[in-house]
Length: 417
Image 1 (cartoon, rainbow, N blue to C red):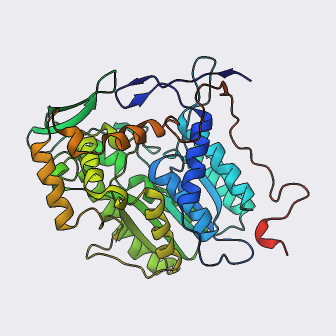
Image 2: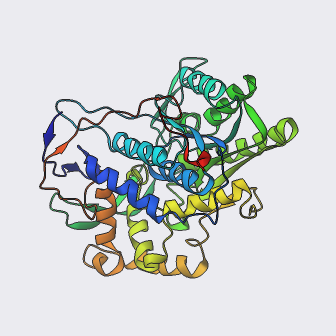
Image 3: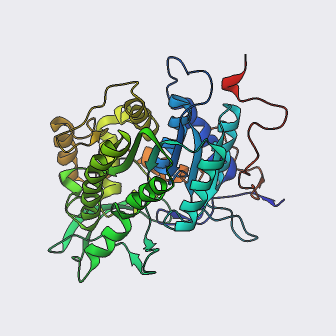
């Protein structure tokens, strides 16, 4: 097993390696930050499927589901294994850590590494539900952010883009140079052209979510009162031109329309429900790629400080609403809103004021840059408190296996006396 000292090497917000121990500790910290429920029912928990389980809100959904609802089931993600030259992706190491937490908690959670868009992955999941989990699925959380999707029916590969619709957009954005010095720049993004909108909707809209439901329903695997939620984002008026009013916003609108269609259908067939969950701003590997989002998030943290609600607490609230531990709180569009802490008038006014005066010279006084820089590095397992980064670390961490449940000689924790 290879061991080496790992130091962060990055190109902008993209890091070339990930730190296994840092990723593991990050997952442990998220687990500790998730509030424990008042009481966990004895016996097997509900069967859940989390699609996109290794990063961002999908990772939070997996951990919060384990802790708040005692889920068992399947978590799907698409990660790269370690090689002789590179570490594994951060999501690979986070998945290994999550698997250990699930086992310690006495929950049978199977982790699949595969393309969520493919029918072969869907078939593998359906087989597992049928053969290992009693043939009934209670919950599906859909949290997929991807640059491309191949349609299984046509073989056509679609590519998503981050562009405004109608006209070019010029916005401020935050970057860091090779020494980590912050700079506020203005960048211009040209408008969507040709079939950019349709391509982005095909990747990031509701088509694949609906295909998952179709596949599982055809196999007769949806339990009575089955509930599904797709994770979404609306964001601030400051970023609306590139996000909610742009190509990605068109995809999110399609996702929400799909939720309404699925909700009507599930209500009639299994007495179930489909919703979108609108989450608040967070530093994720997806969000840092969007012009203006890094600046906005840093400024938002500068305004809210510790009152900025992290993904793990938002997803704990989502699970409470899905399971009935808390009342279902929907807006007029039928969406669960977990972003209200961010979008109040006073918070948005304060962020907008800082946005207007943000320059390279003033940004350190307006945004929480230390927090933002650390959050970006923590995505890859660096800058995690408690980790000695001078110590060589084994990078060849195996993917969690599908050990039959319960492990030999053990019983699930929920069944112990």
